[in-house]
Image (cartoon, rainbow, N blue to C red; front, side, top):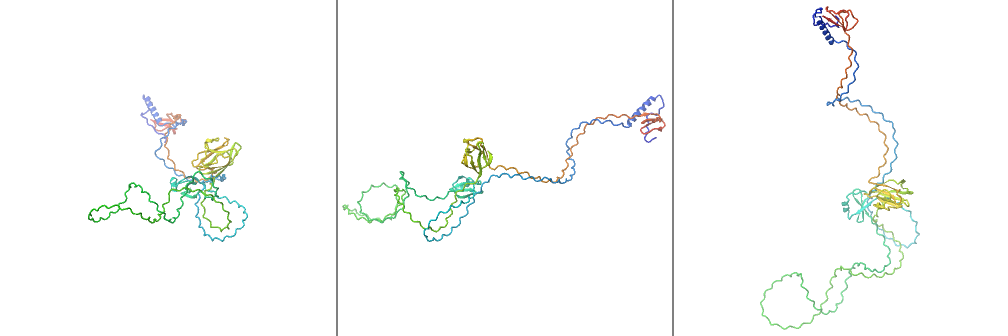
Length: 523
């Protein structure tokens, strides 16, 4: 029997054409059906794939981290870009001038040299002709800008009220100017100038009808010599007894007690004697000390007539030059410098300020501005409202000569100055804004610098955890069943034209002609 055929024993003993043949054929048919079910024919061609089912919902995120992937190799550094450096942008406009620093304290005055001996007086020389006027000296350095904010009776009072200050803050103390120097107030000297030369005496005025103030009491003259004693005058009447003093005088010391004498007999009363003659007047005692100066001034004496002016004496010879006197006190501080603006006009259409028509001005609190106006017929006003001139809203705090049309306006901007505006008194089109701030306007942004070289590529990050597996999609529809293989049953091996044949006999030997796929039945 070929190796690819498997003998099949059926449940019936024989197929002998007995009356039980129908039963036996039924058994045979059942066994053949079972066999074919267990051993189907060759699989037919696969049917077409059914349509894909809808994707299932994403599964819940995994709680277990997936394994970390290996770090990727570092990429090579990119080549440097070939772009050239951009051209330098234009220089921004100059910022506003900062506050001037405080004036340093004056150095000590050098010691005065010894005065030389006076030379002999020479003869008066002939007065020489007046020399030519010397050239004007160079303009002195600009003074430090200061703002006098008030006065105090002492330095302690100032320091208590203002422990710190800002550059340029200044206060008066008894005529001296104290300026904030960064950490303390420095006395820069008395701001009152020296006393001028006394002018000539004016003519005597008419007598005043109002009494002038009483002059001071003159010094007491020397005591005169004692005059001769005058004749003694007659005794004046006895004055009335004065009232008893209300103040008891001091009690005198108690005398020692004398011994008690014996009591004498009482004598007879004698007659009254005659009054004796008056004794001679005693010598005048010395003059008492001069009394204290009177506290009440005596009346001022009448002014004497002015004497005639004496003849002018001859001019004496010029003496030798004396030693240089001590340096006088420092004069008051000069005006501070400032930021200068030039104002003209473009007919009646606009002001032209530093070359721009009706520009927005930027003023800094605490700074000084010098506004030179040359716009005849167009008074320049600083005010607190925008638009046309408003006489009820003029701003004059710190402003000198506001409203001039041909002159200089000085504006010391206070530290509490609000937003301001400027306007022509007669033309509403000539107006603009003044932005007031604690800092100057921001300059233009500079050009962007050239792009730097690209940095090296960073290392590859670790691989993230693997997401949870999504749910399995729905199973696609079953494809169509292929055609069944053909199985033809034969009782002998004479027909070899077909495949998948069934052979049966009782010899136990498959007939010739069987091949792979055939069924042999032995019964």
